[in-house]
Length: 524
Image: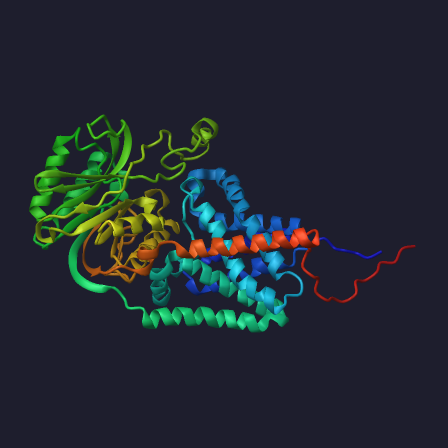
C-alpha cells in the first residue's frame, strides 16, 4: 500500500511562522523583514493537502501572530491571552483557504496574477475584522511596520496604512510564487516590480505637505516614579516639570494620560493651580483627567471618564474631549456578565469606564490663537478613521495623550509611539504623542520624527518646534478606498467561483504538482 505520512508538523510550525511578522514592529523594528516574513506561513498553507488542513494552519498561524504582536499583555491578562489569541486566530482561516486555493498545486500565469491581487485582499479582510474595537482594535496592522520608511509613509498619504498592508502582502505572495511556482515567475517578477514602481512613482511625483508655520509645543512626561505615586504626588510632579518651562515662549503644553486624578469640577483647587501654571508659562495646558465625574449639566452620565481638558490662564476653557474608544478589558470588560471572571484572572478593569459621545476639535489661544488641535487618548491613535475625522474637522495638530505605565520594559511603548508617524503621514498633519510614562515622540506632517524622543525612563519636559502644514492628502479626501477595492475584488472572485460551481458541479481543489512516485511498503 502507498504510505502518506501525515504532515502534522505543518500545524506545529504554523504558530512560529505566523509570529515572524512581529519582528518587523518595534522594538526589533526590522521593517524590511515584513516583505519576507509571511513566506514560510504561506508555503505551509500552499502545501496543505486539504482545505481542513489549510484552515488549521491559517488559524494557528493567526493565533501565533496575535500572541507575538501582543505578548506584552501577558502580565496583565495572564493565561487569558492564549484563548484570546485562539479566538482572534479564527479570522485568518478564510485567508488560509484563499492562499491554498490560489497558490496550491501547479500555478499557471493567470491564477498567479489573480493571487497577487486576491491574497493581499484576503489578508486585509482579516485586518479589517480584527480592527473592531471590541476585538482589540487595529493594533499591529502589517502596514504599520513601515512607520520609519519615508517612501512608504508617502504611500500612506494616498491610501493609509491599509495600502501599505496590501503592498507588503503582495510582495510576500510574489516571493512565494518565485520560490515554489516556476511557471508563474513572470507575473511574480511583474508583481514585485509593480510594487516598487508604485512606491517610487508616489515618492517622486506626489508633492509633500505644504509648510504653514510652526508651533512650540512642550511635552511633560511625568515618568515611572511619578506615575507609580499617588494622585497628589503625580500632579505635583507635573507641576514641577511644567515650571521649568517658564520663559520658553510656548504655544501649548501637553501632559500625558491620567496626569490628573481628580475631576476638576470637584477640585477647584487643582483647576486654580493649573490656571496659574498656564499663566506662568504663557500657554494653554492640555491635561488628561482620569476620574469619577458626577452629573455636571453636560448630559454625560455619572461615572469614570478619561478626558482631555484644555486649561488656560483663567482655568478650564470648557473644551473637553471624553475618550470614545475604550480598551477592552483594560478600561471595560465586554459582556461583563459573561466574562467578568477575567478580573480575577488578570488586571482587567474592575469597573467599566464611560465612553465619550463625539470627537472634539479645540482652538488654542494666545500667540497660537486660531490654531485648532485634535485630541486623542491612548490607543485611539491606532484607529486611522479617528485622526482623519479630526483633520477633516480642521485640526492642524493631532495630539495623543497616552500612558504605558503597565508595560514598561516591553515592546508596547515603542509600538504605540510609532503609530504617530502613520497618522501624521496619512493626514499631512503633525502628531504629538505625549505619555505619562512610555515613549513620547513628535512627528512632522510627513511622518518624520521631530526632535529627540523621551525614553520610558525619563521624567522631563521637552520643547519641540512642530512644523505645521496646509492642504489635504488623498487619504483624507478619499478615505479607506483600498479597503473598498479589496472587498470588491474578493466579492467578484467569490461570485465567479459561485457561478463556476453552479455550472461545473463542486469546486475542485488545485491540481497537484508533479512529484516522484511514492515508495511502496512491503507487506508479508
